[in-house]
Image (cartoon, rainbow, N blue to C red; front, side, top):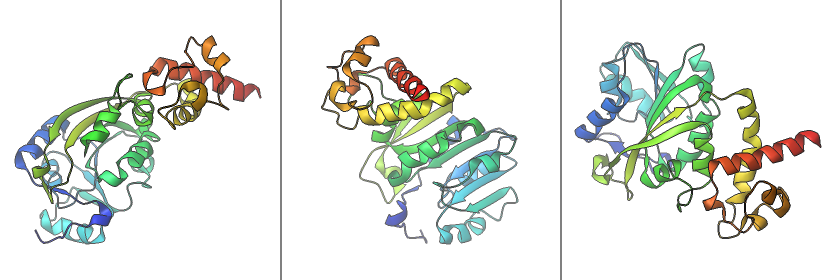
Length: 263
């Protein structure tokens, strides 16, 4: 392998042919799909995808990888490379009037902020397939009552449906990471204007509620909602955030939103 993986970019390159085939099969790309691959790296997924689509956009930060990728893949005419930071890339501008399918073997150190960045532009995305640290996938797909239930799961599931597809062992990568990985499918839902307007209040409530997980809602939500507010919503102020359902979080957010509008 001619490119030395760089720690600062969180590079772990996928090389397992069986895992690659399984990921491509899960994506099931059609010829006319507009697919965006984040972090193509050495092109392990890029090559098989190029054979199946008319155009493939890739977003890569590492200039050395950008320079080497076309030659590595045989200078394909349907490859469009964007040398850019995926965390700030404008996916809306790339999509235009069409929707994107976004995929990637994401560096563990940027996975959460990148997911939130993409969800902010979710109206232009039809689905996402990501390889992530399994712990992160567990949090994305968590349910109330589990230790993994937290801000990432609530804010993802407020906008999208998420399912873990399969796990991937460390040996599928070079260098092998110290953690297990998993592939997740995230399908954004079409939100009404009312639902979108509620998201800032939901973010405020969820961030406060999970800010100190061991404390009760009575304490964590101080300054946002008091015990009387919670009781009116049929939520026991003595509960902890990890027990709160999506519907209950949305009801809390609605009360905060209504109060801010009337202030």
